[in-house]
Image (cartoon, rainbow, N blue to C red):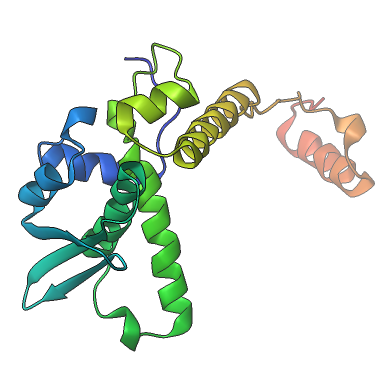
Amino acid sequence: MNRPYNPPLVEKWVSDTFIQAGIFYSSDLQADKICKAFGIEFGGHFGISGSKIINHESFIVIDKRLDVPDQHEQFLHELGHILRHDGDQTNIPQSLREYQEWDARLFAMYAAVPFHMINFGQSSTVHSIMDEFNVTRAMAVKRVDDIRQKTLWEERRRRDKYVPVSTPFSLQNCTDETKRIMAQLSKQTGRKFI
């Protein structure tokens, strides 16, 4: 399959992790299947979503008041915390907490529409992404824009790839000192330098 760009590290990590867990198709992106693959307990309640690791056991709880696509995205966000972060967010510096939230949002975007599940041979629209991957319009727009931007960057990188230009040596372009040294070298070696 022709892929228009090489995924950055986090995007590649998400796909590799899902592939190793046997999550190959968009139909596999269900909370119960993912939790079974990673050994995570999963449930829903009428309250805020969250995740915890207690005594090496992982738990994700999702707010059942949300629409199904919003629940799915919250689940993926919390999954990002479980798979990528360690420790209790209540006991870490604010800057680290902000980084972990940013990273979990990035993880959720890549996990919602994983690189290895995208058919780059056909044109994907926001609506087709929403339908196939059961995500909100906002997430589909964000992921489609992300893919387009990376594709454009890769096309530009390939087009503008630096090719060094070599110019032949010319003594006329040299400094007076270089000309003096080359003249001396010519006398010593008996060879003429251009």
